[in-house]
Image 1 (cartoon, rainbow, N blue to C red):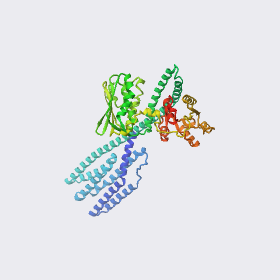
Image 2: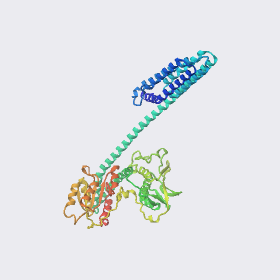
Image 3: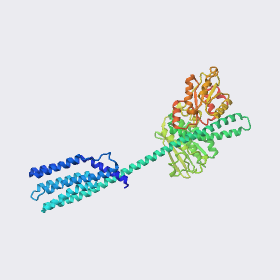
Image 4: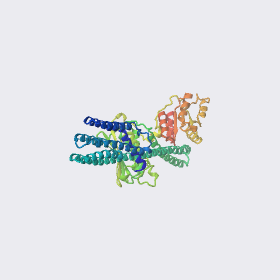
Length: 601
């Protein structure tokens, strides 16, 4: 075995024998003293007392000797192992004098007692000295060899029988001791190898966690940096589209906005993964009508299925389940969208069936199917079946990953069965509840619409009961000039007065100007990440406290970092995620500014 591993095993052996050091000394020399007393009582001789005194003096010296302890360096382990082996060998040699002193041909009881004492001492020591084979041999051989020789020396049949018996016992003892030593050594080697593997696994897990954290940080930074210019493009595009509404170039503006929205949807999908990993989504569990939800699914995907010449069958069931309607809708919409993408002919069906107190919701397709070896991987991020060229028409490969995360969040197990070339079935298991008429009007809006229309991290409803003007003014705080200009153009195009500020100081100037009472700000629209490490949440809340503003705060952010998303959620402030869709922005402003919602978007 490798040198370091061998030393560690030997160290455990040394620790084991030294753990019983005191007990071994006391038992061994106690037996010697008892033997001497018995012999002296049986035949008083002065040399018996001398033997006892020498024997006990040797035991006292051994008791006072330095011993191995846990602080001994690993490199010194071999030396201590040799030292212990020499010590027990000396003990055995000292005891080996007893047979020659006490065995005699005419005193069979003394011979029997001595034989039993020596064999018993070897049996006891054997169990303690299994870890160190040299010590086992060093203790057993001198003592037993002396006994065997002294018995054979007497020459009569009884002593020869005892000598042969003792020899057989010695051979048996050495054989069992060797086997036990090997067993102990192998178990220690296995233990240390397992510990080494566990340590290596721990290192690899730590490296994987660091890589995952670095990936998350990279995606958060990259997503934010991509969202900034895309946000500006979306705002300028929306303003341009509004300005060209009656112009022949309006179609080009519409195509531009479709492309911008498609890119924004891709970033939103990645944001969903970050939000789920961050734990900032809290399910709102309630009775959900599956028929109402299925009608929304049919309405959402009917056109897509028709474009692909596929049949979309959504079967009513009259069943109700216990779930979060928005999150469940997101799961089902991702499954239906995935099924349509991978189905070339035939169709997709969505159905629900009751099984005891459980409802099975199944999404079935007649698509390409999934090979058995790939079925466990379809829920991985960015993994797509039969899309090695990364065709963007088939999405990013994140939809099923979101389904799996939502499945764990809602405790709705998801199963997949598939046959290549025949199709795939995804099954969700949900708890069933009785129909709840009071909830029949409950909307089954998709999660994406909830994210776009209000604050998905912390939905909040604000009203401006004290607003005196139909619209009022909006204070926009953003550290990027292009974003301020684009947002101002868009809002002004819809008749909304906007005051812009690059930082908190400029916002304080705007709020402190004369005329605030007659034409107040009715909304603070603030970018979350500002210059010099500031964030819009803190800045907006400081402004509200300083000026006693009734105007609500709305954040605009491209953040995907879990810790920042958690902080925003905890604040309860509504959030719009970049790139902000113009219609979404105007709908939200309509909630805060009476009269705006009736204007065309």
